[in-house]
Length: 94
Image (cartoon, rainbow, N blue to C red; front, side, top):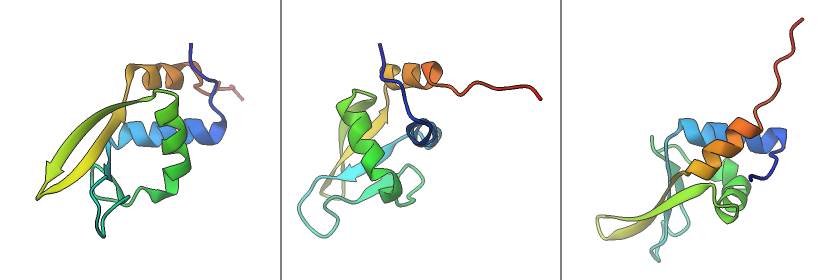
């Protein structure tokens, strides 16, 4: 059973799913806490949603290293995909 998503949460989770993954720098230094989409775009605009979705189990997590820096790669989990399906807005015909 998933949490019912608000319209904004649904839009953010859909957006995150379309971007394929997010990477969060977890190494101390200037890049600490930097959040990037797979294409390198800054992902801070969805930070509040990222924290909520992570707590709800909507991400799979994998540690990656690039040039000595550690990043957490977050991808949408099966549970997150199910939440998208269950919260899909209803289409009304005109």
